[in-house]
Image (cartoon, rainbow, N blue to C red; front, side, top):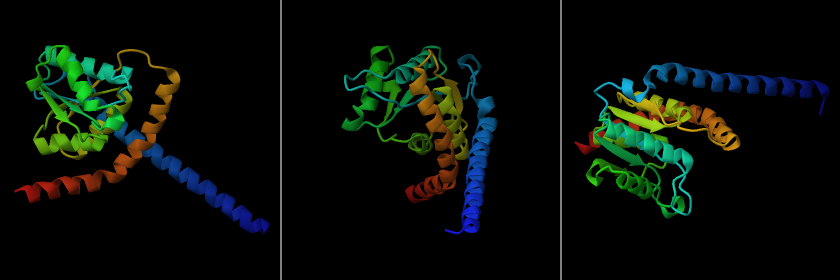
Length: 214
């Protein structure tokens, strides 16, 4: 390959990487900026927020929730006990492959005192976007989203993009293993870009389904 062509390819590659990096950074900054005032301590939640949406996370083969999931459930339990949430949605992947995530979440809440009639199951919440769409379809327009802070940014941004008056309460109740935590944080940086890219199609899908249901 001629040196001049190799130089052009190197420059083009550098420009491409730089442009992609700028786009990723811009999307993340935009989402953080637009949602920062919606992540609040539980005591500062407005009265309009009346249902807690717990986003699913890993369940171990033994049936025990992972630490992150346990913290999300404990945070939702606090919201219920203090009257900040009248009911709790547990949303996740309830397939055997995921060790019946939603069933485990519901059982944890029930064993800790929430009546089963106040626990709402969303077994199709395989992705954050699907969990948000569940709220849209069921008319839960004022949810309190419960997950770790790094995840709240994307979840809240998607909720706002779909017209929900959503708030977020962070479920960071302990220090997590540094390596595992950094992996999910880095993954989340790119997941936000995907959420930004698919927001329009999600809106179209929701409104199309609403029209067809009339």
